[in-house]
Image 1: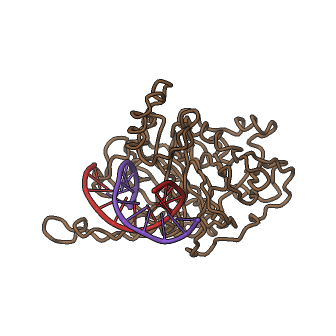
Image 2 (image 1 turned 90 degrees about the horizontal axis):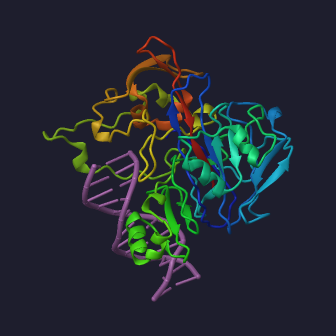
Image 3 (image 1 turned 90 degrees about the vertical axis):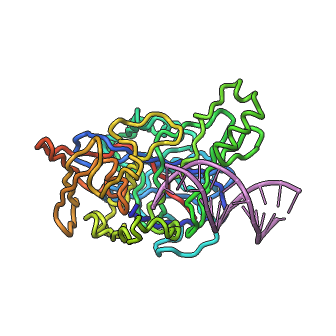
Length: 400
DNA sequence: GCCACCGGTGGC
DNA sequence: GCCACCGGTGGC
């Protein structure tokens, strides 16, 4: 995750936002654009935040393309988590809160989820999702049922792909990519996501709040709780309805890296196996610059990891071949393609070809999802220039 | 005393 | 490096 996004939000309260994350997947469509999926925004109920605004779409559309109506969640105005329709946002300005553009400004204010957005699989524009519940519903089957703008007509009757994106990634916000297909919590249960402060060892924590209010923080605790409260099991609650997968922040270095363990750096001979490769050594995508330079790189892409207990994943989303299967940056097992990677614009190094599977490529250190979104994939193995696009990603932007 | 939050670690 | 898990603890 290279792309970083700054964020900022003047949020003052700590929160418990939940943020559902999403992630994107790859698909093999051959479209011209990079598809991204969804992102939503949302905020936790009781907590308040400030309004948000939408910004131009990520396709670099201009402000003039602002939609006639945006769905903005205004936690202050209504803490219920409902969204507020804002007619004709004429300006595409940054959110009204302070910018978090500096790399890692210290902050003791816990960030919170400001919005959930989902990317349309057809036009790749990001659409704000009005409520966390709706977001969770979309996310649950995002792989099987990619989100499209038309689906937003449920809360925005006239929306279509012709409308400008509701929001785009920029430095004014911290973005995070959610995992796809995370089951909706059982009725009466709440899936809570708490974003940790910058510089923490983890980006966030997921908790489940049982109907009783009891908070559970791991599958082990869930299981134990269900055993102790068989009534839930009788009601149909199953372990498959829980997932502690957390979203990934797009801002680089948001999470403090854990010092490398000594043993891991050496092979049996005592020789250092390899130093961490600099992104630039490994892949051209590492050149991806700051968001400002490459706004399109900010989109979180598909995080092809396999959901914990979750539902099925696309076949071609090769199970993140556990990293151990990584022989080198290039060779992977099944699903392999010779992929030519081009930076769409501002290329600093032309085109490069790699033997990578989509999934594993995404797993490569350094780039991951955003990178996938920002490149053009060409399948060279069959002589065609098919584009390999990501079509479903979910993301949230975090308010701090 | 509780608990939200953070840190650390074992396993992969 | 990532993830799941859980212990510790500061603030209430």
